[in-house]
Length: 361
Image 1: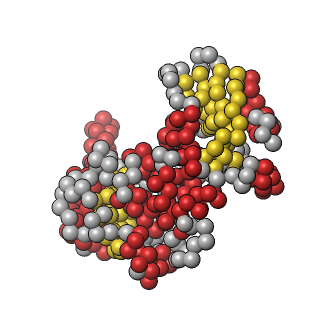
Image 2: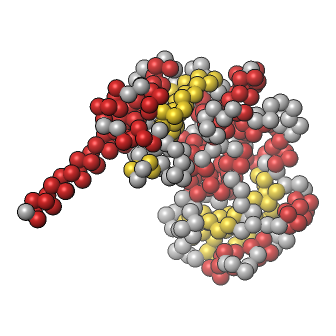
Image 3: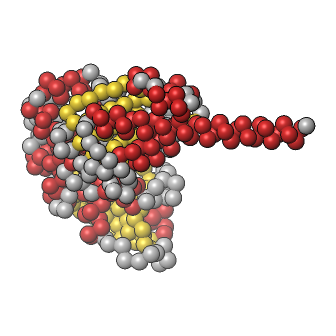
Protein backbone atom coordinates (compact mmCIF):
# COMPACT_ATOMS: atom_id res chain seq x y z
CA UNK A 1 0.00 0.00 0.00
CA UNK A 2 2.84 2.37 0.86
CA UNK A 3 4.45 1.73 -2.56
CA UNK A 4 1.13 2.28 -4.32
CA UNK A 5 0.62 5.53 -2.41
CA UNK A 6 4.05 6.77 -3.42
CA UNK A 7 3.33 5.97 -7.05
CA UNK A 8 0.04 7.88 -6.89
CA UNK A 9 1.72 10.92 -5.36
CA UNK A 10 4.44 10.83 -8.04
CA UNK A 11 1.84 10.64 -10.81
CA UNK A 12 -0.07 13.51 -9.25
CA UNK A 13 3.05 15.68 -9.04
CA UNK A 14 3.96 14.95 -12.66
CA UNK A 15 0.39 15.74 -13.76
CA UNK A 16 0.48 19.06 -11.89
CA UNK A 17 3.81 19.97 -13.46
CA UNK A 18 2.50 19.18 -16.93
CA UNK A 19 -0.66 21.16 -16.25
CA UNK A 20 1.39 24.15 -15.07
CA UNK A 21 3.57 23.98 -18.19
CA UNK A 22 0.47 23.81 -20.35
CA UNK A 23 -1.09 26.82 -18.71
CA UNK A 24 2.07 28.91 -18.90
CA UNK A 25 2.57 28.01 -22.55
CA UNK A 26 -1.11 28.78 -23.08
CA UNK A 27 -0.69 32.24 -21.58
CA UNK A 28 2.02 32.89 -24.17
CA UNK A 29 -0.31 31.67 -26.91
CA UNK A 30 -3.18 33.81 -25.66
CA UNK A 31 -0.98 36.92 -25.49
CA UNK A 32 0.29 36.27 -29.01
CA UNK A 33 -3.20 35.76 -30.40
CA UNK A 34 -4.39 38.98 -28.75
CA UNK A 35 -1.45 40.86 -30.28
CA UNK A 36 -2.04 39.39 -33.72
CA UNK A 37 -5.62 40.60 -33.55
CA UNK A 38 -4.88 44.07 -32.14
CA UNK A 39 -1.84 44.80 -34.31
CA UNK A 40 -3.17 43.03 -37.43
CA UNK A 41 -0.26 40.76 -38.29
CA UNK A 42 0.10 37.14 -39.31
CA UNK A 43 2.52 34.46 -38.18
CA UNK A 44 6.04 35.00 -39.52
CA UNK A 45 5.72 38.75 -40.08
CA UNK A 46 9.28 40.09 -39.97
CA UNK A 47 8.11 43.51 -38.84
CA UNK A 48 7.11 42.22 -35.43
CA UNK A 49 9.27 42.40 -32.30
CA UNK A 50 8.36 40.51 -29.12
CA UNK A 51 9.83 41.49 -25.76
CA UNK A 52 9.02 39.74 -22.48
CA UNK A 53 10.33 38.90 -19.04
CA UNK A 54 9.07 35.33 -19.42
CA UNK A 55 11.75 32.95 -18.17
CA UNK A 56 12.86 35.45 -15.54
CA UNK A 57 9.50 35.92 -13.85
CA UNK A 58 8.40 33.34 -11.29
CA UNK A 59 4.67 33.36 -10.56
CA UNK A 60 3.23 31.48 -7.59
CA UNK A 61 6.38 29.38 -7.45
CA UNK A 62 6.22 28.49 -11.16
CA UNK A 63 8.89 29.37 -13.68
CA UNK A 64 7.58 30.93 -16.88
CA UNK A 65 9.93 29.90 -19.68
CA UNK A 66 7.20 27.80 -21.34
CA UNK A 67 5.47 31.03 -22.30
CA UNK A 68 8.34 31.63 -24.73
CA UNK A 69 7.34 28.49 -26.61
CA UNK A 70 3.76 29.70 -26.86
CA UNK A 71 4.90 33.10 -28.12
CA UNK A 72 7.31 31.70 -30.69
CA UNK A 73 5.07 28.97 -32.08
CA UNK A 74 2.12 31.36 -32.45
CA UNK A 75 3.85 34.47 -33.84
CA UNK A 76 6.78 32.83 -35.63
CA UNK A 77 9.12 35.26 -33.85
CA UNK A 78 12.26 33.76 -32.36
CA UNK A 79 15.62 34.61 -30.91
CA UNK A 80 17.23 33.04 -33.97
CA UNK A 81 15.36 35.48 -36.20
CA UNK A 82 16.34 38.37 -33.95
CA UNK A 83 12.79 39.43 -33.11
CA UNK A 84 12.13 37.83 -29.73
CA UNK A 85 14.15 38.92 -26.70
CA UNK A 86 13.95 38.34 -22.95
CA UNK A 87 14.30 41.57 -20.98
CA UNK A 88 16.00 41.01 -17.64
CA UNK A 89 13.81 41.64 -14.61
CA UNK A 90 13.90 40.30 -11.03
CA UNK A 91 11.85 37.14 -10.62
CA UNK A 92 9.21 38.77 -8.40
CA UNK A 93 8.09 41.27 -11.04
CA UNK A 94 4.78 40.60 -12.86
CA UNK A 95 4.89 38.51 -16.02
CA UNK A 96 4.37 40.64 -19.13
CA UNK A 97 4.44 40.48 -22.92
CA UNK A 98 5.05 43.29 -25.40
CA UNK A 99 4.58 43.31 -29.17
CA UNK A 100 5.76 46.01 -31.58
CA UNK A 101 5.04 46.48 -35.29
CA UNK A 102 7.77 48.56 -36.90
CA UNK A 103 5.68 49.01 -40.03
CA UNK A 104 3.32 51.40 -38.28
CA UNK A 105 4.84 51.91 -34.82
CA UNK A 106 1.91 50.30 -32.98
CA UNK A 107 2.66 48.38 -29.78
CA UNK A 108 0.64 46.26 -27.37
CA UNK A 109 1.51 45.52 -23.74
CA UNK A 110 -0.11 42.69 -21.75
CA UNK A 111 0.47 41.99 -18.06
CA UNK A 112 -0.62 38.64 -16.64
CA UNK A 113 -2.84 38.17 -13.61
CA UNK A 114 -1.12 35.67 -11.25
CA UNK A 115 -4.43 33.89 -10.66
CA UNK A 116 -4.69 33.13 -14.39
CA UNK A 117 -1.90 30.58 -13.98
CA UNK A 118 -4.08 28.56 -11.63
CA UNK A 119 -6.57 27.90 -14.44
CA UNK A 120 -6.77 24.60 -16.30
CA UNK A 121 -5.47 24.82 -19.90
CA UNK A 122 -8.96 24.40 -21.39
CA UNK A 123 -10.35 27.02 -19.00
CA UNK A 124 -7.60 29.44 -19.99
CA UNK A 125 -8.32 29.04 -23.69
CA UNK A 126 -11.95 30.09 -23.27
CA UNK A 127 -11.35 32.77 -20.63
CA UNK A 128 -12.01 36.42 -21.60
CA UNK A 129 -8.89 38.56 -21.97
CA UNK A 130 -9.61 40.59 -18.83
CA UNK A 131 -9.65 37.40 -16.78
CA UNK A 132 -6.07 36.63 -17.88
CA UNK A 133 -4.47 40.05 -18.21
CA UNK A 134 -4.55 42.79 -15.59
CA UNK A 135 -3.36 45.36 -18.11
CA UNK A 136 -3.90 45.59 -21.87
CA UNK A 137 -2.39 48.79 -23.30
CA UNK A 138 -1.91 49.91 -26.87
CA UNK A 139 0.04 52.90 -28.18
CA UNK A 140 2.09 54.12 -31.11
CA UNK A 141 5.69 54.18 -29.85
CA UNK A 142 7.58 55.17 -32.99
CA UNK A 143 9.76 57.98 -31.65
CA UNK A 144 9.19 60.32 -34.59
CA UNK A 145 5.45 59.84 -34.21
CA UNK A 146 5.61 60.45 -30.47
CA UNK A 147 7.61 63.64 -30.90
CA UNK A 148 5.17 64.91 -33.54
CA UNK A 149 2.20 63.93 -31.38
CA UNK A 150 3.53 64.88 -28.00
CA UNK A 151 0.14 64.63 -26.27
CA UNK A 152 0.09 60.91 -27.03
CA UNK A 153 3.74 60.56 -26.03
CA UNK A 154 3.04 62.35 -22.76
CA UNK A 155 0.12 60.03 -22.09
CA UNK A 156 2.25 56.93 -22.74
CA UNK A 157 4.88 58.03 -20.23
CA UNK A 158 2.91 60.06 -17.70
CA UNK A 159 0.13 57.51 -17.33
CA UNK A 160 2.65 54.64 -17.27
CA UNK A 161 0.53 52.63 -19.66
CA UNK A 162 3.19 49.88 -19.79
CA UNK A 163 3.32 49.75 -15.98
CA UNK A 164 6.59 51.66 -15.71
CA UNK A 165 8.30 49.78 -18.56
CA UNK A 166 7.79 52.63 -21.05
CA UNK A 167 11.37 53.87 -21.33
CA UNK A 168 12.71 50.34 -21.62
CA UNK A 169 10.28 49.12 -24.26
CA UNK A 170 10.12 52.29 -26.35
CA UNK A 171 13.91 52.55 -26.49
CA UNK A 172 14.55 48.94 -27.49
CA UNK A 173 11.70 49.02 -30.04
CA UNK A 174 13.04 52.08 -31.84
CA UNK A 175 16.65 50.93 -32.20
CA UNK A 176 15.43 47.49 -33.30
CA UNK A 177 13.21 49.17 -35.91
CA UNK A 178 16.33 50.92 -37.22
CA UNK A 179 18.17 47.61 -37.59
CA UNK A 180 20.30 47.62 -34.45
CA UNK A 181 22.63 44.64 -34.29
CA UNK A 182 21.64 41.50 -32.40
CA UNK A 183 24.44 41.87 -29.84
CA UNK A 184 23.39 45.44 -29.11
CA UNK A 185 19.77 44.41 -28.44
CA UNK A 186 21.08 41.61 -26.22
CA UNK A 187 23.10 44.13 -24.23
CA UNK A 188 20.10 46.46 -23.87
CA UNK A 189 17.88 43.55 -22.82
CA UNK A 190 20.42 42.46 -20.19
CA UNK A 191 20.62 46.03 -18.88
CA UNK A 192 16.78 45.91 -18.88
CA UNK A 193 16.51 49.10 -20.94
CA UNK A 194 18.37 51.12 -23.51
CA UNK A 195 20.07 54.34 -22.54
CA UNK A 196 23.03 56.36 -23.87
CA UNK A 197 25.18 54.73 -21.19
CA UNK A 198 24.70 51.30 -22.77
CA UNK A 199 25.50 52.76 -26.19
CA UNK A 200 28.68 54.33 -24.81
CA UNK A 201 29.71 50.85 -23.66
CA UNK A 202 29.10 49.51 -27.16
CA UNK A 203 31.26 52.28 -28.64
CA UNK A 204 34.00 51.70 -26.05
CA UNK A 205 34.00 48.01 -26.91
CA UNK A 206 34.39 48.80 -30.62
CA UNK A 207 37.25 51.16 -29.83
CA UNK A 208 39.12 48.67 -27.64
CA UNK A 209 38.64 45.86 -30.15
CA UNK A 210 40.21 48.07 -32.81
CA UNK A 211 43.12 49.19 -30.62
CA UNK A 212 43.73 45.88 -28.82
CA UNK A 213 42.26 43.07 -30.93
CA UNK A 214 42.06 39.56 -29.48
CA UNK A 215 44.64 37.43 -31.30
CA UNK A 216 44.50 34.07 -29.54
CA UNK A 217 42.36 31.90 -27.30
CA UNK A 218 44.67 32.75 -24.40
CA UNK A 219 43.58 36.40 -24.53
CA UNK A 220 40.56 38.06 -23.01
CA UNK A 221 39.46 41.49 -21.91
CA UNK A 222 39.44 42.58 -18.29
CA UNK A 223 37.69 45.73 -17.18
CA UNK A 224 38.49 47.96 -14.24
CA UNK A 225 35.22 49.88 -14.21
CA UNK A 226 36.23 53.06 -12.43
CA UNK A 227 33.85 54.75 -12.36
CA UNK A 228 31.02 52.36 -13.26
CA UNK A 229 28.04 53.34 -15.37
CA UNK A 230 25.63 51.59 -17.72
CA UNK A 231 28.46 50.91 -20.19
CA UNK A 232 29.69 48.06 -18.04
CA UNK A 233 26.56 45.96 -18.53
CA UNK A 234 27.17 46.11 -22.29
CA UNK A 235 30.76 44.95 -21.76
CA UNK A 236 29.65 41.99 -19.68
CA UNK A 237 27.50 40.78 -22.56
CA UNK A 238 29.85 41.62 -25.43
CA UNK A 239 33.03 40.28 -23.81
CA UNK A 240 31.72 37.76 -21.25
CA UNK A 241 33.57 39.98 -18.78
CA UNK A 242 31.46 39.08 -15.78
CA UNK A 243 32.09 39.75 -12.11
CA UNK A 244 31.95 36.08 -11.18
CA UNK A 245 34.66 35.16 -13.70
CA UNK A 246 36.91 38.06 -12.65
CA UNK A 247 36.33 39.82 -15.93
CA UNK A 248 35.20 43.09 -14.40
CA UNK A 249 36.05 44.93 -11.19
CA UNK A 250 33.89 47.84 -10.14
CA UNK A 251 35.02 50.83 -8.09
CA UNK A 252 33.35 54.20 -7.59
CA UNK A 253 34.86 57.67 -7.67
CA UNK A 254 33.88 60.55 -5.44
CA UNK A 255 32.29 63.60 -7.04
CA UNK A 256 35.45 65.54 -6.21
CA UNK A 257 37.58 62.96 -8.05
CA UNK A 258 35.25 62.94 -11.06
CA UNK A 259 35.31 66.71 -11.36
CA UNK A 260 39.09 66.88 -10.98
CA UNK A 261 39.61 64.23 -13.65
CA UNK A 262 37.15 65.87 -16.03
CA UNK A 263 39.01 69.18 -15.67
CA UNK A 264 42.34 67.46 -16.16
CA UNK A 265 41.31 65.57 -19.29
CA UNK A 266 39.60 68.29 -21.31
CA UNK A 267 36.03 67.72 -20.10
CA UNK A 268 36.06 64.02 -20.95
CA UNK A 269 34.85 61.54 -18.36
CA UNK A 270 37.31 58.80 -17.39
CA UNK A 271 35.63 55.56 -18.46
CA UNK A 272 37.91 53.01 -16.82
CA UNK A 273 40.88 50.78 -17.53
CA UNK A 274 40.64 48.13 -20.23
CA UNK A 275 43.16 45.31 -20.36
CA UNK A 276 43.85 42.76 -23.08
CA UNK A 277 45.21 39.98 -20.89
CA UNK A 278 47.18 36.94 -22.07
CA UNK A 279 46.64 34.21 -19.50
CA UNK A 280 49.49 32.09 -20.88
CA UNK A 281 52.13 34.81 -20.92
CA UNK A 282 50.68 36.39 -17.74
CA UNK A 283 50.95 39.85 -19.20
CA UNK A 284 48.76 42.33 -21.00
CA UNK A 285 48.24 45.69 -22.64
CA UNK A 286 46.12 48.32 -20.92
CA UNK A 287 44.28 51.46 -21.97
CA UNK A 288 42.85 54.13 -19.73
CA UNK A 289 39.99 55.57 -21.78
CA UNK A 290 37.74 58.58 -21.56
CA UNK A 291 34.30 59.21 -23.02
CA UNK A 292 33.44 62.76 -24.03
CA UNK A 293 29.76 63.19 -23.18
CA UNK A 294 29.88 66.91 -23.95
CA UNK A 295 30.88 66.11 -27.51
CA UNK A 296 28.19 63.42 -27.80
CA UNK A 297 25.46 65.79 -26.61
CA UNK A 298 26.57 68.23 -29.30
CA UNK A 299 26.70 65.61 -32.05
CA UNK A 300 23.22 64.30 -31.20
CA UNK A 301 21.66 67.74 -30.78
CA UNK A 302 20.52 67.00 -27.24
CA UNK A 303 22.76 69.43 -25.34
CA UNK A 304 20.02 72.02 -24.78
CA UNK A 305 16.95 69.85 -25.21
CA UNK A 306 13.69 71.79 -25.39
CA UNK A 307 11.25 68.96 -26.14
CA UNK A 308 9.30 66.56 -23.92
CA UNK A 309 11.08 65.55 -20.72
CA UNK A 310 10.78 61.83 -21.50
CA UNK A 311 12.46 62.16 -24.92
CA UNK A 312 16.10 63.37 -24.79
CA UNK A 313 17.72 60.05 -23.86
CA UNK A 314 15.63 58.22 -26.45
CA UNK A 315 16.58 60.74 -29.14
CA UNK A 316 20.21 60.48 -28.09
CA UNK A 317 20.06 56.67 -28.28
CA UNK A 318 18.91 56.76 -31.90
CA UNK A 319 21.34 59.44 -33.01
CA UNK A 320 24.28 57.72 -31.33
CA UNK A 321 23.69 54.79 -33.68
CA UNK A 322 25.30 56.91 -36.41
CA UNK A 323 28.59 56.76 -34.51
CA UNK A 324 28.79 53.08 -33.64
CA UNK A 325 31.54 52.61 -36.22
CA UNK A 326 33.20 55.91 -35.34
CA UNK A 327 33.77 55.53 -31.59
CA UNK A 328 36.76 57.85 -31.75
CA UNK A 329 34.39 60.83 -31.95
CA UNK A 330 33.87 60.38 -28.19
CA UNK A 331 36.36 57.74 -27.01
CA UNK A 332 40.02 58.63 -26.54
CA UNK A 333 43.12 57.24 -24.84
CA UNK A 334 44.38 58.89 -21.69
CA UNK A 335 47.23 56.45 -21.19
CA UNK A 336 48.66 53.20 -22.55
CA UNK A 337 50.74 50.89 -20.39
CA UNK A 338 51.83 47.28 -19.90
CA UNK A 339 50.69 45.07 -17.04
CA UNK A 340 52.13 41.94 -15.51
CA UNK A 341 50.42 39.72 -12.96
CA UNK A 342 51.50 41.87 -10.04
CA UNK A 343 50.32 45.13 -11.58
CA UNK A 344 47.03 43.56 -12.65
CA UNK A 345 46.47 42.46 -9.07
CA UNK A 346 47.14 46.01 -7.88
CA UNK A 347 44.55 47.34 -10.32
CA UNK A 348 41.98 44.84 -9.11
CA UNK A 349 42.54 44.56 -5.38
CA UNK A 350 40.54 46.34 -2.69
CA UNK A 351 42.49 49.05 -0.92
CA UNK A 352 44.29 50.14 -4.09
CA UNK A 353 43.13 53.06 -6.23
CA UNK A 354 43.37 51.77 -9.82
CA UNK A 355 43.70 55.19 -11.42
CA UNK A 356 46.59 56.00 -9.09
CA UNK A 357 48.17 52.63 -9.88
CA UNK A 358 47.79 53.51 -13.57
CA UNK A 359 49.37 56.91 -12.94
CA UNK A 360 46.54 59.06 -14.27
CA UNK A 361 45.61 60.80 -11.02
